[in-house]
Image (cartoon, rainbow over all chains, first blue to last red; front, side, top):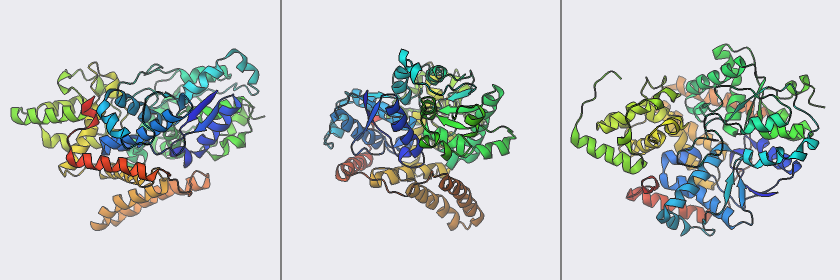
Length: 292
Length: 212
């Protein structure tokens, strides 16, 4: 399968491991990614708080590039980018005058023909296909993940059709179950980690993360799995602080979904960037003997 | 939030009209069921000023209170209120509208660091077309600590730098920080878009939200 690919700024800096994993893992399971030519920042949630026009115009330039490409589907692993691009596409579908105004400045016009996929929508059909089992060389037995979706996989600021359950999504669970893991039912899977509040309202974010951690531990999870680079970085980089402030004894590695798919299909752990986590992400796999 | 809100018809009509037009949200549809309130993750942090109360404040025409309150800046944009609202009112879009209205009215943000964060993010991503985290954090630290320096609050300034630098050092050690500058080639086209945004903002005639 050939897909257009929008990495976004995070995946080119602090979450570069996610970019590397997306390319290596998806290609290992038969999906080739083609990075959009000269893409720009989507504006993330910040743009919509500062300027309504650029909040649509910035993603629109990328949508135009995608519409002009030879691919019909575009995968966007970062939740913020995914959300902003979907929302911009929706706004432009209904607001023709805004569309004309933006298109007047673009060399690649927005047509609206590109189908935007989340990382789960890209992976799921492959993993759930009948012959995929043969590719799994390391079964994720003993792994009890709390699948953490955060806000932007299922909730949007505009009426965008949502494919999974808004409050109790199952996309990650379905994938991980077919890899041999035992994902747990828990209450905080779509709660907010605070996102940028980790930087600008740290106490709020640490409080929100403490609730997420406590529930996951109470359900006896041994790791988090996420699709969002902000969720991953927050839960990983600030975990020590959360544990110290709220007296949480257990630490939990925070995996990207792509990482675990990569482990399951036998990719070398170092190639996936598992050694570049803040909370040790190799130890648990060793304990469970799924590193060999 | 114990004060009783009084109703002033003139102020109410102009405020609720402006917020509805700019946010694209029908505030009159709110019947105060408080489903948003029970799902709001920052309710405890805002002194229980929850989306329902913010909406009520606007409907009653309390302009000053609507532009200057903790929810406007502490909202984490999780969109829980909007997804659970039986009348599809997306309060996060009301909150984002109030942020912009507060800025236009020169009302200082109650959480200056939040405002500085978003302003720095947008400024940095507009400059090269892609966000460079180091440039962004540099701008943010400058913005947040300059005020403190002027007011001679050195301890606050030092604490802020220390807390952000601590994370920076760990990120560096884990190979999660990058110094390679990301920028786009289609700079001219990108700048035309940004310029158009600026011209529209000066006109303030219509926002995409109101066109929905």
